[in-house]
Length: 432
Image 1 (cartoon, rainbow, N blue to C red):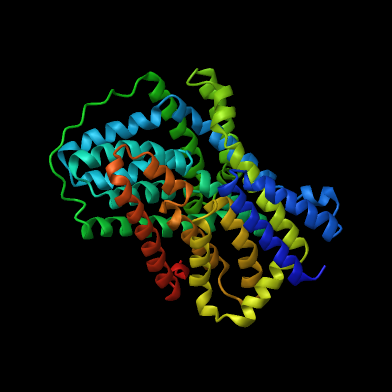
Image 2: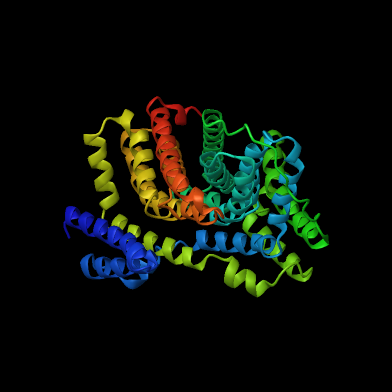
């Protein structure tokens, strides 16, 4: 099959998959799997075994273990209770509230929840305060969405796990530095942007308000929080120590203290301590819908790779587009696509499949390209057209704010994307 024709078929498959999810409410992964089967087996003479081999087994297992573990904290209310107590502590320092919203959304997703969960929890809490205290709704939406995305970018959190698995498939054993750099850039940029927006919109000048004292953490919450802290500490502390101490036993501990297996042990501990229901954690906590969507799109992109499409596109870009434009181009493209599809499960693997061979051809930093893709895909997640942004506006209890929020979220999404694109043009995302 001609590569140009194959490229057209793959683009049609992606477009139809995304359109079907919006119009027919179908899982785009199922539609993508159908296209992958028809194009791969009947157009490229692939065997079904070859087709299925592109299913992202390691990434799915990693996400399954993490979401199952952290869903206990959502199920028993640990995360919401933490958020309520933090905001109550800040009640007499009103200017801290916007910063607190960002970091509570950050903490909820750093504890393993998916950004939609963080958005849902913090939107309800934040907008109930925003109405009474006069907190700017634009800044509130930015703090919730960007804080949740930043926390989820940690290597052991949901988005970080997806990115780790994808990068590891290209560069085995080298994913961790990539993901930490991506987290650092997104965290710094999103926090500075949110605070700057607050200053411009006078979001720190809040009026006096009352907030009811929430219940303290009960024994179930304390036990669940302790288990989360232990699991996270066993992942992060040895890794940090290994940067400064050269010891064989530490190397071995880092090798086997893998977050996905520690999460399985944590799940077992939560179950034995009766901190929640394991069946509920499996059926409702694990994002099976996302797995099908991500897996289907990955297999369709695998068919494109098998047929040489990604190398073809990379060659075209290397011969037609100036190298200094690559970062901004991928960032804007990722941001645009993220408005209509899942940022990290669809957009990132799609563009990474082009960025990696492009980097090999041109010598442009692959780390910079991947960071730009992750940045762009996550910044427009605040848009009301994306799932994250829709959850924010949907969980705002005051319908009078919906019109302001809708316009504000669009402005926040594309202004942050524009600023990030300028930074990409001047090479900021390749500094470390």
